[in-house]
Length: 425
Image (cartoon, one colour):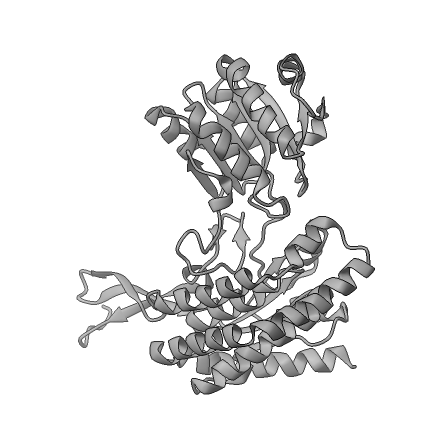
């Protein structure tokens, strides 16, 4: 295959389709979303079969446990994909929304209108649900999309792509509104990220190496995050009944996700009380604890059965493990916790467990991350949980979009002016 010619063809088709998608009515877009959801549900057995083929090949290729976890699609996952599309359909359409209209002394009225970005290129690994989520968000926000999934999910991605194409056509929208690349050739990525004439923004979802490469080589703007080094801080005034389940859920619900907690911070005044209980829970779940000298002493003194506790190295404070491992550090209090997080985190998601309102509000204001939480699991940092229907990715950038990127993150605003014959003098 001539990759350059292939990608130029996709690009031209996407650019043409983007104009039709931008002009599509809310009713047509919602029709497409519900039609895609219906097909995904009705074809669940075929999707599971395609996923099984992908998993078989992935195991043969020696993919690690975290990648296999991301790749696995269950019946529940299929239902979540369909429900996510329906939730997107139920959300207000951001396209055409007018805001901040103000009358100027000249008589004109000036405001903003929300508009699609145009053509969005999305590059991702594993997670076949991204194909449906990304398609749904791009459709509702009036964008065209070129989706390049990883080779490990090829069969499942293509099966979902067929549902998307048919749903678009049923709604009278261009099938090229969402195109899924059907080759695993890595040259596709280079062609996609260096084609500003066809693509308006790139959203990478994958490993740090992939995202670093895209950020370095792209000639198209990129919405990205590199790591998910998330923190839970147990404050001096933490409720012990909340602390253990929040740490448990943040760390152990799933290990291979970017919103999984990788570091636990504990206020010194509560360490002797809270750390043994948290440590026993983590040990029972098979989680290795890499502890600072002070927390190591507390955990060892607790004599937790079956616990694997080792001394932390400095590199552990910045690590995204994506595995049953957590770094543990005792801090003096809120000031040191905030300083540690702002020094070592990847600015993704952080949570404080505290019953003190003033401290909680300081944490929210001063922690420099895309999502900051009070008394809640970091695992909530997700587009579906935030009411976005789904997310196209999570951004730790500070310009344009930050945190889970939903419909508004896939649009921009242009200035609009209403006049009644006014001229500038």
